[in-house]
Length: 435
Image (tube, rainbow, N blue to C red; front, side, top):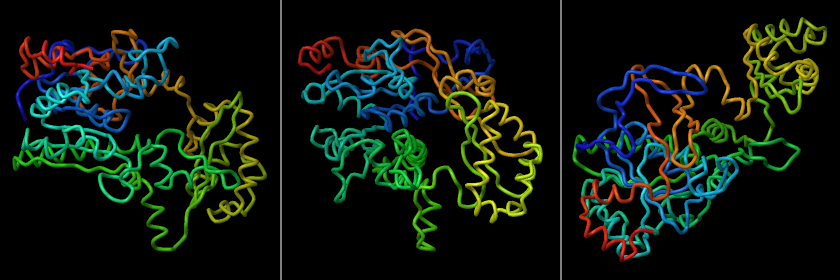
């Protein structure tokens, strides 16, 4: 790893052992002198979700990540809500902010030769170079892998797009919605008597960064041991398929295709989200075995319908799901979702309230674990940021600072990180390098 820390413009990781987590919650953490990726330098030319989320992992854990943007076009997430107080603006959207914590932000015009010259300096500086554009875009700009290697022979470059860098579908452009559809998620998500109703979000956008962050870590370890760089060609379609492994294996072995079946399971019943008291309130319930079925019966007060012998084993319950779901819904509909969850959990039956984002902000378990971090953003003020899905004893994984404003750190990056003189920076500005 190269020497160098995160830099004062973003904050000193050792400035305090006390961090504010969630509404009114303070947790004391022991901050280490060195963060896991401290000294790793990342030139992040990616945009929207997959690439920025991947580099966010590195940034939150100590890497020096420089996020490269342009004024035109703006990153799509900078023009998408939710906007703070409902007031639009490129620096007022938490959609962008969530995926770009702990990073420096600069603007470059990559269609301008002067901007490409600065990009070359940034690539030469970096240990990791990421991009997420249509295949061929970086080569056309003059900053593809061949150029990157000539500038920095041990660089690790990541290119991620929907279908991969080569092949008959390589030029297919779009978002995670499209890759999710092609991967098969939309065919299997929804109800059998309705059209496909795929995952609400751009699904492969949420899956891919988990693979990519681990892949970059492996490449960094390989370089540490051998001195060799890597070129990582990551197709979001292929990464998305990993979460369909059971269905793909089943089809390969039995020839049975999977299709939409609502919230039902092939192996357990009842299994679904059931309506509760109140407007659009639900509780998810899953009965995995006969013991849990007995627990559900006790929670319901041993009603006569639940004593039917047809329901005593999984095969019988699977064969009569319509009847079971109808009767169970009558019970859940009369109770608030939390009461349903608590009654079932007390009898050993898996159950969980279907929560909204507003509910998550006040979830006592998330507050206890310090999941949401209140960070002071220069434009939006104090805003809660989601943390990571794990805690490491004695170590605060971040996020360590809010997302940058558009071009916020351009001068600092050019001068302090890339070593450009005042004269060189002025020349770059006059030449139009700074977008």
